[in-house]
Image (cartoon, rainbow, N blue to C red; front, side, top):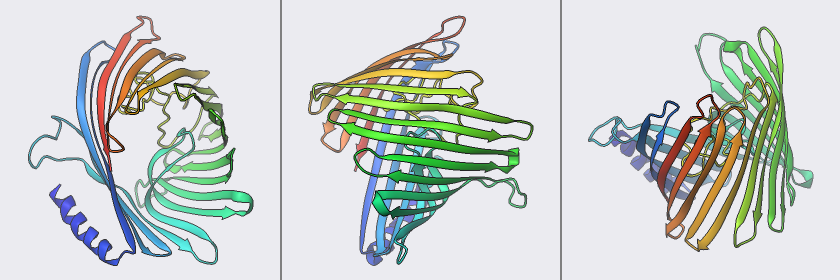
Length: 363
């Protein structure tokens, strides 16, 4: 922590003196959960994380961003004492340059990116991003991600190249074309992923399809599938549905974080670190995989809402969950409390539970 402070203080002073404008933002999250595992062993943990970000405009054509993450620190596991080894790392460090004459922006360094549904990636990467808006509100994006730098003296790295085009408007529609080259494993993939979004009065929809050609050393595979998130907002309540289907060999992923609203058999919004029985089941699946989830949310007060969800996943299990969201300080400090119960699809019909609370400060 001392080293981080020694770096950040002079950096903020330098940026503050030379920048046209700069802004500091952050998020502090503390959460606790108890749960059991496949063998019905009871357990749980408490963890916390602090994110700090610095955005600065050094020139009308040049921005810079630095973000660091302290955590996730699991209490009692390297945290809680003086001079303990906290997990501190840089999540973002890039230049954002506007190219005059070409009217495009290029980013170089460590940055964040996700596809529209988070099926392939929802994470940080090192590389280059080039964005340009064409005529008729068509936004284009080219990305080179350095996924893995293995032996620097050997041709065994992993790279992902992404070409993305989207027609903006009331109904955004777009397409991802991805090429992954994983030389260490002698594996390549080509992914087509069209998507669309829609908002019509109280109804909203996000949907994506994918076709994934997978070329391995010994044989080639094909993956098919798609996902859709629907929501009906009636002010007095919200109804939603989440559908994910994958056939053949599924989808090649890099660092996905697809959230289906479940905590035991998925990734839940208020605790995305349980991940008890998820493990990206739509990747490399030999049979048909389907995740079907329905959810509801009811605001009881401007600072209090209750929510619930129920879902079924093939070869995994069934889950119901419920909880509440409480705004302790408007637009600053929020708390969520939830509980989930699941029955695993196995010979013993293993029963699982998860109970937790999260406290999030955003500034």
